[in-house]
Amino acid sequence: MAATRDGYGQGLLNISGDERVVVLEADLGKSTKSLHFRKQFPERTVSCGIGEQNMMLVAAGLAASGYKPFASTFAIFTERAFEQIRNGVARPNLPVHICGSHGGTHTGTDGGSAQSIEDLAIYRTLPNMTVMHPCDDVSAAELTRQCLELSGPSYMRTARNKTMVLHEDKIEDIKIGRGIVLRDGSDVCIIACGVLVSKALEAAEKLAGDGIDACVIDMHTLKPLDGDLINRVAATAGCIVSAEDHSIIGGLGGAIAEHLSSNHPVPLERVGVKDRFGESGQAEEMLDLLGLNTGDIIEAAHKAISRKSK
Amino acid sequence: MMATTTADIANLEAIATRCRAQILRMTHRAAAGHPGGSLSEIDILVALYFSRLNLDPNEPKLVERDRFILSKGHASPGMYAVLAEKGFITEEDLSSYRVLGGVCQGHVDAKWTPGIDFSAGSLGMGLSFGMGTAIAARLDGSERSTWVMIGDGEMQEGSVWEAAMAAAHHELGNLNVFVDKNNIQNDDFVEVQMRMFDIPAKWAGFGWAVRECDGHDMQQILDAIAWADSITDRPAVVIANTIKGKGISYMENNPAFHGAAPNDEQLGIGLAELGIFEVGA
Image 1 (spheres, chains in turn cyan, yellow):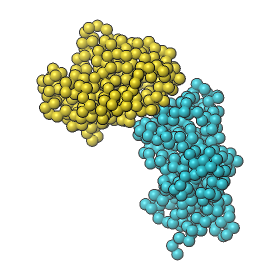
Image 2 (cartoon, each protein chain N blue to C red):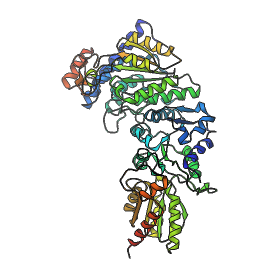
Image 3 (cartoon, chains in turn yellow, blue):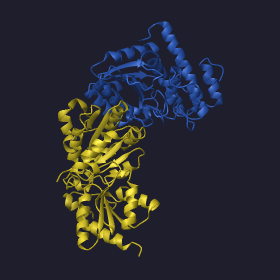
Image 4 (cartoon, each protein chain N blue to C red):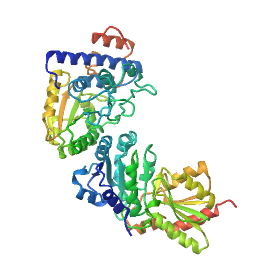
């Protein structure tokens, strides 16, 4: 078990040998895990205080000067700087890499104000922006490294709490923009991101007990979306379930719905936060309360299968 | 190299007058744009571009160039006029102001115009970006400097003060700001819209070195630039007292010309006031 935010912290250390890498913090380095980089490279770490709007544009100025800035805070607080990101980062297409930690309701007891359920949706609307939400520390570290290869900006959501490590020893499978098939299946395909990937695998195990053969995909990159892979599984499974700790509006489910409607219409059931805010509770309690847990994915799979044309 | 002789001053003033004429022509041609703030900032821009900034129009992306950031990006006609005088763009390019596919976008844009470092248009952002380029220069061990121009109304954006606080915290002696204090914003006088109280005291309280100058007196502007350069242990801000619409009688101190273009008759009057008697390119 590990948290994706730890993967981000490790990822920054892994790329620290590149002198262009600079880290920007907004008083949450202990939480986002950029503190490990700061401890070793204080001269390449910029404290921006509790000032996210300024931080995003300081990062833009660094990027415009040839540096590779990584700016992190809570996912929810990146949203405070949305217009700075829109006009100052995405529009000039500057390689600023934003990490929003503590995303989703899985964040837990801090309550609704801290649980971003819309970050993936809003960043997905920005031209030039790559949007990612890894499911484990291994992929979070590797995707952080691959940000160095991007010519434009990126947003990566990480999570506060520990989840299953799923990609150990399979780093070569992790590529920005490519979904990862974790389990093959021909009755239904569950496409998940972040903390719900391990839940999707659990659901697939249980579905197998009922004789249902479920494919599971870790769709760690929401934009650019791996449309080829979605087309393929839509053809073989004939129906899809999306699963994310995010609003059902505009996130992974929204992205898949947009893609399917134009390319390969098949039944889609979206597991996600149903247009409401979160509240205080333990991570598992939040998943149960909001209909994001294993049982909800199983139910959605049955429904999607039942909607396939006879 | 600072200009100091009377001839140098006269030369800078002549450039500024030509730029003022272009500001009128551009906004007149586009039947839109922001002449008032362009006319208030123009003497400072000319002083910086023709006496201080280390720039090469043939290599606008040279790493070791000074950075100038026009945060009040709507005052783009002034910026384009200076870039044309300096040779970054042509005089013909000025005709493309606000025209589809034009080099001169409505608000300054680094993607479209050689010599523009920062894509502006949303107020309160340029100082933060300039802080980034100043930190980059420090990390590079470079002597290059960053100059940011903001408006007085712009200081109503809270993020300006996030940046002011952070730049002072990081002791960015290579970062300098000009405030084009023309006392007018979009809807009305600054005093009506949102009183700014003691602006020098605000900046000093945030840890900056502060000085005021007459933003239309070329010698005072040059002295202020030299002063800002002499401050190396913290960022420096020059509050330049300016007149919105400076140089054109009917625009001076008139909120109506924040975002309105001169008509045919007004263009002729304005150019004549500048001592130019043909409408020109």
